[in-house]
Every structure is written in structure tokens, then in C-alpha cells.
Length: 147
Ligand code: DQA
Picture 1 (tube, rainbow, N blue to C red):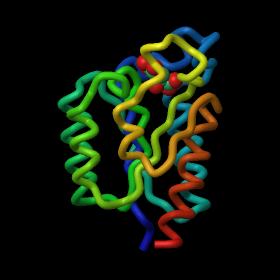
Picture 2: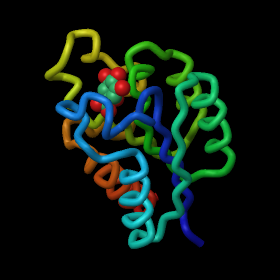
Picture 3: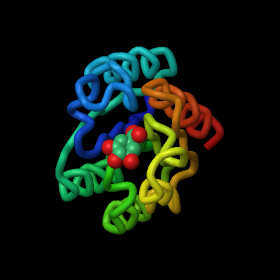
């Protein structure tokens, strides 16, 4: 049976492709979903791909993944830098968590340098553009194979 992976996207990532393309590139979130699904198909993973602008919804989905999934890829977007609640939700999960940032948050404003989610993440990918999502899936597939 395929392993189930939730790919969760935080606020403003629905505007990918339109939003500051000099930072986040021209691909849309739908493009990212399609690349993730193609990669997952080859790696034998089943993908649930979601985006929300609401912190509580992301937390509800992490709690759902806790019951239904084998791993999470999450780009918490701005909530990375503010949300102890998302960290707490991820801390209830005992499967691999990979954090993704499209941009290199360490080369940007100081307030983006710290991510609460990194305290739980098994791996962090930043600055690889939207390719970071399939890199994260590749890592997750390795971790799930090893488990
Ligand atoms: C982001 C980086 C965050 O600092 C920012 O708030 C985002 C996107 C990224 O993917 O590079 O919305 O997580």
C-alpha cells in the first residue's frame, strides 16, 4: 500500500506565480501540486495537497494527518516565524516532517531567519525554489523506506 503524505501550504501561497515572482518564481501552486503528484506517483507515495490562509485550518490538517498520514511536507509560510501552535501540532506527530521554504529565508529580512517549525522538522529545505517540494518528497520517501 502507498504511504500517505500530506503537503500543507500556509498563507499567501495561493498567490504563487502572481506574488513577488522575483522572490517566489512564476510557477503557480497548481503547478507545484502537479509536480508533487508526478513525483509521488513514481516514488509510490499518495499525496494530499492543501493550502490555507488560516492558522487553525493548518492545525486541523496536521491533526488529521496525525491519524491518516505517514509524513508531512509543510511550507508554513509566514506562520513559520510566528506560530508556536503549528509547532505544538507538529510535535504531536510521530512521523517525518520536512519543512520547505521556496526562498532562502536566511538571506532575507532578519525576522524570517527563525522558524518555530524547524524545532520539529526532520529536514529543512530553503532557497531551492518550488523544486524544494519535490526535494522534500524525495527525502520523505527515503525516510519512510528506512523506517
Ligand atoms: C516562505 C518564506 C516566508 O518567510 C514567507 O512568509 C512566505 C513564504 C517561502 O516559501 O519562501 O510566505 O515560506
